[in-house]
Image (cartoon, rainbow, N blue to C red):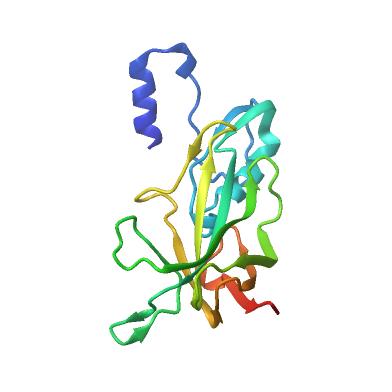
Length: 211
């Protein structure tokens, strides 16, 4: 990639492109000669699980020039309580899985969709995320056996990139203990996970609040 980029830059014969191309791990120490004006980083995944966007931005941030831009600037994360068909040819799905836009087996939404947290890449520090008391109100009766996670990336204050066919697709996370809900039920959900971690470490526990 570095060789191809160098060849492309040389072919343009543009003085602005006469700069060294460094190939290194952005999660490691960077010894740069000049501060960074623009950090463009696309290590995005739903809720920033598995991808290293948050840790890379945290590591590179001390190298940024005053007023530098980070693109995307932040990630907005959403949650919906759902009833999903977790039976697959006689087996029960117990691991998070993603949905494609035209998937014919989308789960039934039982609750409102809430904004759970915003990850600002200009200030994120802690890679561990604890959301102990998320509350969703149900508008449909059923068995809430999973939560659906979605994300949007804000390039800046005016430009949004939402989920597409391949970019941070909605994820369905089965709950270890389903809860039965009715119209108006309030469900409290506790979630713990790590940015850049693994879905096997993602924890989601739900309980119905007293009505």
